Structures are given as C-alpha cells and as structure tokens.
Image (cartoon, rainbow, N blue to C red):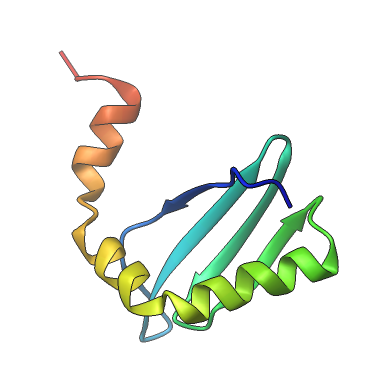
Amino acid sequence: MSESVDINISGVFEKAGKQLAYVSFRDGKRTAEGVIPDCVISKNNGFTDDEKASLERYMKDDLANLKRAASRVNVMTAFMKDTGEVK
C-alpha cells in the first residue's frame, strides 16, 4: 500500500438501533469503505486481502480517535461545503 492513503469519515448515524460511522479510504483509484465501531471493511475496490486487513487493523487501533472525529462531523456544514451555498 502506498504511504499516501486519503481517509474520510462520516458523521455518526443510527442504523437498526446502533450508532455507526463510515470510514472511507482512497489510494489513487483504489477505494475501500469501513464501518465503525465494527472495524470491518464493507466495500473494497482494489486493495489486496493483506491491505484490507491492515485497514481493519488501523480502524481497531485508532477507534477512539475515529469515533471522536465522527462525532464532530456536522452533516449540514459538510453538505454545504461540498455543494456550495444555496442562494
């Protein structure tokens, strides 16, 4: 895996009574999406099995920081930043 992997995290949301957040990884054209707090890669496009295991290990090792980051995501601010202001 390259040294430069972009990581993005969603805000916290509830699904089936459980609080979750998505962590997405991008390395060029390769992408993967994980779910916390389960720390499981749910979608993978291009990462090897060993790299996928490394991403899952990263989520487990850094779970507290990932949860904190997800709790700070303001969905409306993130939405407006990506799409511009509504006029």
